[in-house]
Amino acid sequence: MNGLIIINCKLSIFVILVGCLFIFVNTSNTFSESFSHLGAYRNQTLIWPIIVIFLTILLLSLYYKNESGQVPSFMMGFMYLIPALSASISEAINGVFFNRYEEVFLNYIGVSHILYGLQHWREILGALGKDVS
Image 1 (cartoon, helix red, strand yellow):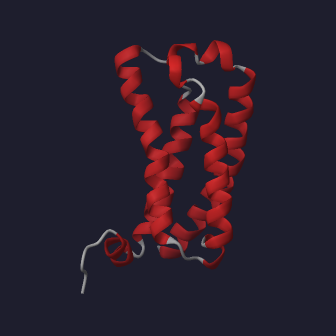
Image 2 (cartoon, rainbow, N blue to C red):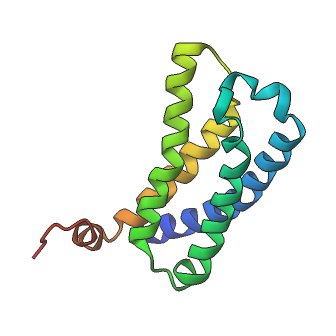
């Protein structure tokens, strides 16, 4: 099972790089019409995919290549799930604005990273300040 989780996490890293690049290009081309409902937050829609690509490349070069970095992966998983959850809540209040494929994309990579991190749950609890002897 651990081998499957590691392969899935590596696949999700590739999906992140391609998907975020696609989201950035798509958002850049349709920026003014598609995100006018976000008001002051519409500029953040352009910067988010670039930050994710940068952090993914950084983590790939520092941790993932050695199959380590469960704690950063665990934290990054929540970074991916928060926008998906926020989009769902916003749609429940304001109506449908977000692309379903982006929500599935964010949920997949978020859960993949969290599962990869949970392989070493003692290390994660230690990083969070819990004593696990």
